[in-house]
View 1 (tube, one colour):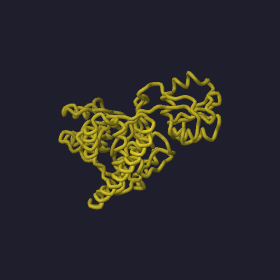
View 2: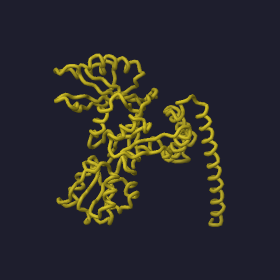
View 3: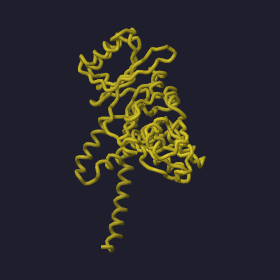
View 4: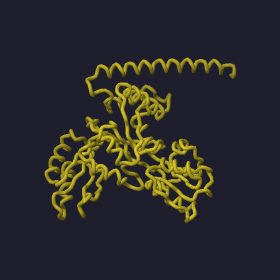
Length: 365
């Protein structure tokens, strides 16, 4: 049997060369499509086309190759070929190897150019000013709820950017430091959401005098740990590898299935995919009992499902609030369009944040 191994390896090398040749051909065809498209249409995201490719490949595959791996491989191929038509820049909450960075990989693939920002507001500013075509920001977590800095940025930049898409990632947190010894940890640093998601584990396994430090991101915490032997960082495995830390403990989140939802922001609008969400920012016209209920009744009367409702205080206006709404459907749907028109007439403030394809699956990272 061992005598056949060299022959099998030789055949694998031949297959790899054939795959490479076909990838090069696919890339050139994608570039040609880009040259034939009207200006401004290059690299345009076609959700339906991508979905059709995945479904066709899954059907042809049968049970020969693992479906998740097949999708991951072709996601990189598809995004790389698309971006060969027109390179794009993506702003994200940095530094490198944050969960936002990984969510960017998931949505745009690794062929995009990624620009780390110090905070979420800077991501919005970079997109608003046109320095990056897209930005990716965390908006809510299945355990700790909404990321308020993202909601506040939507309020600040309302009407200047729109939601282009969403990504959901099942996240596993790890504790790491330079030595890998938990006894060396005197300060635990991470993003506030990560600290909150690991609260019970930290209370159980670390002494009470170990301080908590709220960093701008999980990767910023990993950077701090790389520079200080007494700092432990709660971070992703990618960040731990990036900053050459040693693992102290893995999977320290208090609840399994911990999933974060990220939003992709940009300045272009998405066409209907048939499986969409529409997001709004609204404020009732009058502060009186039932004002918000009257607005929301419009949705129930039209059988529109409301999937999210959250309030945030309006800056500079004492005790006044705006409300974030996610509802099933696309702006171009007749019932959504009619409901939005009726709601706008009843609101003192009304901002369309975007209609975009919903993401129903998550990848663990």
